Image (cartoon, rainbow, N blue to C red; front, side, top):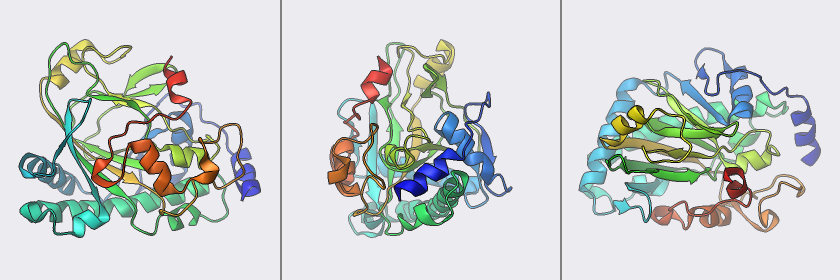
Amino acid sequence: MFSLFKHALSQGNISAKKDFFPLVNLDGNQFDQVVPALRRSGFLIVTSTLLPLELQQKALAASARILESSSKTVTHPSDPKQYMMLSCDDLGGEDLSEVSEDIGIIQEYYSSLRKIRDILLKSIASGIGMDDAEFFSRLHNENNDSIRLLNYLSGDENTANRCKEHSDYGTLTLLLTDGVGGLEAFVDGKWRQVPYVKGALIVNIGSILSEWTRQDLKATLHRVAGPASVGSTTSTNDLLKAVSVQRRSIAYFADPNPNVATTLSQANEHSLENEDKMTIDKYIQWRSGGSGADRSGVSFTRNEEERLS
């Protein structure tokens, strides 16, 4: 397996595109654009008829109602936001019967995202030169993905980060937002605004997929900035406008099957801490501060604080 990855990565050329967050149409045979974007910034923006605008709007509205009415909504311990973490089992369970109609909409949304996830994973495998385009998608066939419904509370000119700096810990994150600004990615030493495109999803790489590709694909630090955030390149006026209202989003986290190892090759100088001893389940619990609804995203990898200093 190590030689497979080494050969595949040696074939790629890093893109020199000026656009840090390119728009890729997954219906338009633009699959070859996925990997260059993820090498450059770890982010891209995608559109697909598998996820029509109407379903996106319904999902955001359902998420807002669920967070407002459910007793299972969690207030984040440090960031000014409320959230609910939902696994595939949670979506089909009885614990959320009080909001069953809205959960049905989230289930429909979840199903569409699984299809888009597989398209992206196949595009990535092909894009890095792997002979087996199904390799990554087969490692995601046990419904270990999850959804986080999010509501960022409004603030004022003294509000700093509405979501602290972090990288994601799975393989892929597919993010839907309501268009309220503030999302920034740390690219080329600067906090850069990630643009909003109506009807599109924001995609970024998680640390597991980054490590599987020996960091050829970037697990980029990102945050939701406020007017008082340090180092932002977003205009103060834009951040003041954003923080004056609540911000809604839905994050879909693609996680490999629970018993898959966090490393698919021999350990190297960029290895995750104790990765040879961790399954995906254990790694996610370490990175996220728990499992299921307890995930709070509290742990950094050993290199992340160095990147911010």
